Image (cartoon, protein in one colour):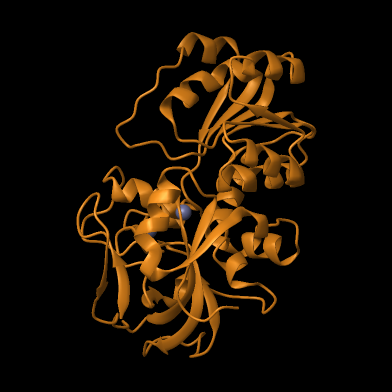
Amino acid sequence: MQAVLFPAPESISIERVPDPTCAPDEVVVQVARCGICGTDVHIYRNEYMSAFPVIPGHEFGGVIVEVGKAVTDFKVGDRVAVDPNLYCGHCDMCRNEMANHCLNWQGVGITRPGGFAEYVAAPARACYRLPAALSDAQVAFIEPLACVVHAMKRIRILPADPVLILGAGPMGLLLVQALRRMGASYVAVVEKQPARLELAKAMGASFAVPVSADQDAALKAIAPRGFGVVIDATGVPAVIEGAFRYLRPRGTFLQFGVAPNHARVSVSPYDIFRNDWTIIGTFALCYTFLPAIDWLASGAIDVTPLVSHVAPMQEFANVFQQFAAGQTLKVHIEIGGAR
Ligand SMILES: [Zn+2]
Ligand SMILES: [Zn+2]
């Protein structure tokens, strides 16, 4: 089959590789679409947990073309999305409702071959059957939206909390919509790209604030005592370090963006103490595919405007570099037939 490979850090190739084999508890999925994610950029730069070579891609769905001997609940022809986070189900973390911290965690497209390929093998237990009405574009958003759902379960948003989101990339724009659904009053977004600010407003942001010298004054006018929830959706250390000045007492800071794994920021412990702050992390997702599917199928979350490019696998290197440079919104690689 054809697949995208990161043979080594900072290199991309498209190669013929052997088709995946199907273990007894696995299925083989013919990939329809797979989304490029910021995490793929971190993998490419070797600032994440992958070893090389790796076939990236963890935001995908497709049709089952082979089932392992022990699989009973799926059959060839089923259209599924794959939760790339593979939980063993028997370690202490899995058995204590913290499966995303599974001691035997594996990630499809992270630690094992992923979805930028014609076929990918995955355990049947990681597959989710799809409502027929979901488009391939929506299906490729289930995984990122499942990460947003997990984040919404991690923070305790209070009714009418004012929320500030730093960064309006594809994830920031999903967060805007999710927080409106969660009961935020004002959702303010700070972002440097004007087109993204416009989209943030279209997605329900109350205020779209450009990155500028006047940004602090603009945010102060919106929330004079600070925001109840401040979310970093950039992963940029300098942005994260500056985020706390927008947080009101009793506020919650959510680290959603993925920073390079060697980055450090400095925060005043006195300020955390003095302000009753809560600082929360959110890693990937944890059995949140079903609510993400429901949010998409019900139309509560609109992802169509978030896809700026759809490209064939042959153009991967080109669109990947554009994505990494922040010149695109979500990029989807179309691999199997369109739907
Ligand atoms: Zn992702
Ligand atoms: Zn486990």
